Amino acid sequence: MPSATFFNYHFRRVKVTQKEIRDNYLKEEILKVFNESQQRFGSNKIYIKLATLGIKTSQSKVATLMKEIGIKSKQ
Image (cartoon, rainbow, N blue to C red; front, side, top):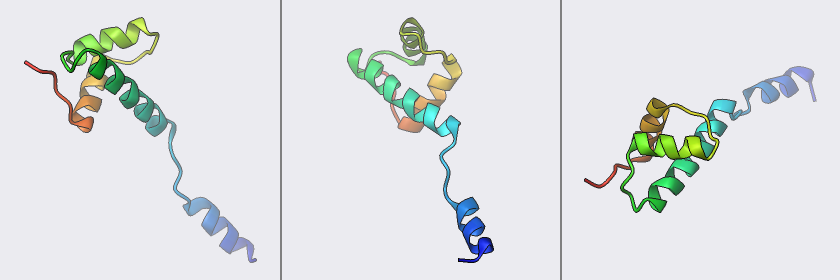
């Protein structure tokens, strides 16, 4: 196999970034907390709950990921 073909394939592979891995982990944790609260917690309370669990993030990041997932708290 020519080296150019090998390196072309090697560098064109789809790579998962650390940010994507972190976001996916946070989305799972957000959904857990959201469902445990019977879908009543908003981004601020979810942020506080994650902080008590030792997960470092920001309230705005939680809000952004909640929008991406498509979840809202019940009024």
